[in-house]
Image (cartoon, rainbow over all chains, first blue to last red; front, side, top):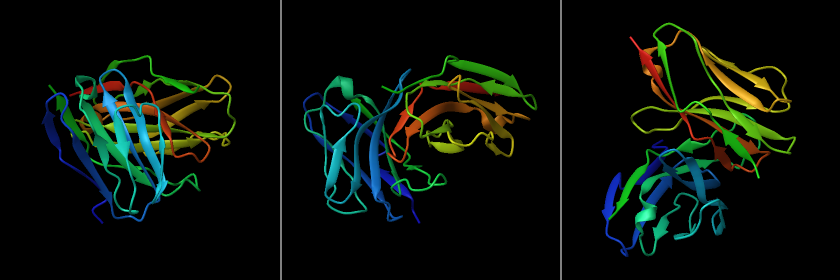
Length: 115
Length: 114
């Protein structure tokens, strides 16, 4: 199993550009989510999905879109990048939490800089 | 709203010694889970230990143990016999019931000195 993969690892954008951060998992997890990590603020939930075709907003959804057309993929779209979106982005996946032993698996992260 | 507070931005410990990282949380829920994640310089998020709120017994995983004080809403992490590989950012996290949504603290940067 490759686990949770994210591409790209690094990206530099100019203000106003658009891009898609890719996230894929091969563990047949129903639940997938996106977090952003900013210095001094920990990780904050952007969007999440409990299955194909179902998405919802997290704590900081503004400026981001998501869709979930397959179980495996959960891309995060920035339609018009802003400097405030400079951050490290993590994708995570897990089974819908049914047991205390369930674990969320995190991808390696994407460092995004918006100039 | 639920919040997680880590009041120690940075800590340092000598190799082989014991260190305790603090975490407090605020919630009115009864059914929740608490976690400690480790983030080494590689940036990978690694689950260290978890605690179910309904369990009174403190969780342990090898050199890592927690002190869970439910009434005080405190969830500290104790690392025994610290090793150089323990150098990392440590995040305390909280999850209500089976929501899968994690709420993170701001992290504690731990440096293990040789």
